[in-house]
Length: 372
Image (cartoon, rainbow, N blue to C red; front, side):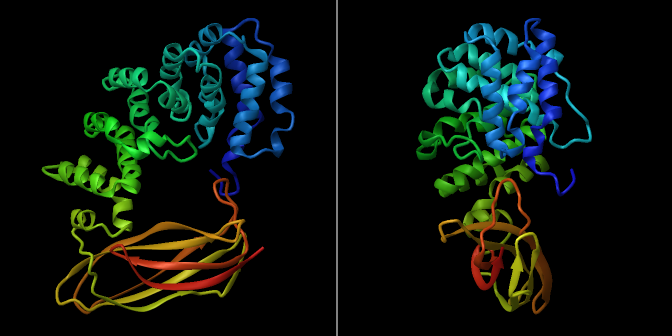
């Protein structure tokens, strides 16, 4: 995918025609021209999530209002769906509004809606659409999800773990699971050794979500799973513990063979340019020296405190590197931080602060100014 292409471009004129082609193939009465007119009007001026909602509105205007009739049409789509250009990293986005439509029109028919989501999830992912059902119909959903744990499709199995993440990015937050994640733990236990890396990575992301509100629970889970783990589960545990590492959680650091008390001297940690502009990149320069008497493992991250529209700042932690440093040895490396506009973050001018984390501890900081 070209760097200049934004994620919102995944829902464009080509994507709309793919949606229209599939609906026309399964429903003879589909008003293709009317749908395309409504969906295309004003689309270019919208951001990603706005485009999803805009296309959903266009779909509702042309599909049967009765959800059971609508579901009959939607459930036939997978066999007539064109996957798009294999070279297009955003080709799956075309199905996003089609799937999320079910969350808008199907809440009154939860059982049928869940069956529909199970059949559609392979087109993109029903991880966003399933969340209102989890919020309003947990018992029904939990029973269905338990039945999907052995489903032959990795997409359906992944939906069990990804759809129930307490803090799924871009998704509705599941407040009950943020408070108490225990209802999803049996699902994660069953899926932690799934044959699909796609599923295992989702399990890791789910545990990482739990770590943000219940770090000790997540750390205990990672510790237990690490015992006797093969390479695939060990990779899952490392990925699941990344927030714990950034927090400097002793148990998570131990899983990586590191210690909270990193013995280093920070020789340099500085922004190379005092002023950068939106669209440019800042370079952070790091140089440190080991003061330990033995070799030590260092997990090096950095935090950028991005300016928000309100004038407050919002921290974002980035991975830098992991290394084993010999006694007295030095390490130096630069790291670029991009301030190019992206779909998921808007950049605001003002002072920005960058922090150096070594084994989860803040050891240095630097500031610079971002200008429009």
